[in-house]
Amino acid sequence: RKEVEQDPGPFNVPEGATVAFNCTYSNSASQSFFWYRQDCRKEPKLLMSVYSSGNEDGRFTAQLNRASQYISLLIRDSKLSDSATYLCVVEGGSYIPTFGRGTSLIVHP
Amino acid sequence: ETGVTQSPTHLIKTRGQQVTLRCSSQSGHNTVSWYQQALGQGPQFIFQYYREEENGRGNFPPRFSGLQFPNYSSELNVNALELDDSALYLCASSLFGSEMNTEAFFGQGTRLTVV
Image (cartoon, rainbow over all chains, first blue to last red):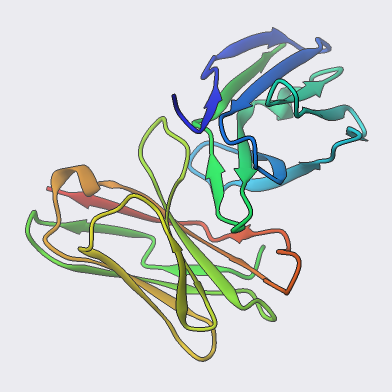
């Protein structure tokens, strides 16, 4: 089993749709969790950290479920500019991050 | 702009050759991590340098080596290049403290092609 697993997609949704991605992790001792966004042929950029209580940033909501060892990202009212690959990142106690392979999102008109 | 710069941006090498990639970290950061990203995959952690010492290593062979300099810039060296080494190589800088690690900022990467 991979340390961090994501459905590669692509998720193909119309503008205005709500879309959710999940990411599962295998190390129960993992301590920090993040979502990064990566545009085609560009570097990854931090989208948001994921806190135990869940957190929201505008149209984006991230949640952590430690019991089931997964994190989720919900995007509401999708925009064309949301089209990108979303990378799930999990850090253990040594602060070494492990990336998932990413989930591709395509938002169409 | 993140302030993390990598050079060169693109590189073509022949199998068996050696390559050195460079990364200048963001001002105020003391930690540099290197990643290999193959097409269609997420970044794979190679190693991390903190205060000029290797601070963790992923599942990469010894022909992948690195350095961090007193100004916290870093190099990634790969010897005996193989075709499968073709990938985007990313470096990320962050500030590591006693109890926390700040957000990592990535450079734009070096795209290495081995022929």
